[in-house]
Image (cartoon, rainbow, N blue to C red; front, side, top):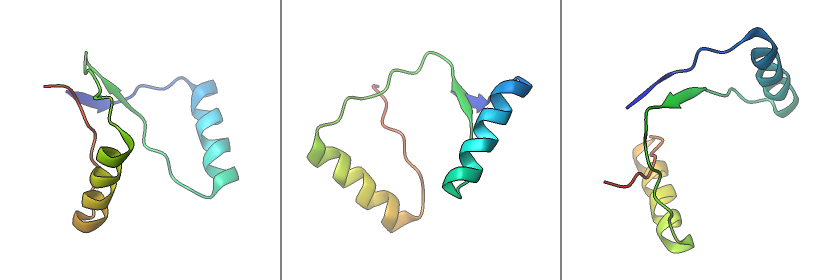
Amino acid sequence: MWSFSKIESENLKAIADLESKLGITLIAFSDDGVKYADLKEDAAKEVKDLEKKLGLSLVAVKA
């Protein structure tokens, strides 16, 4: 479904610059034909709440 992205050096530098600016770490991954679900605000909040409860990152996709 997903794999870590192969990133060219100029794009890697752009990511590193943004990480440094924001004080965060970004993880780049590529999808293989995944169709993301279009969530309404209340559904997105439920997903975020579950992420916090479980300590995970979730991605909503169409089945």
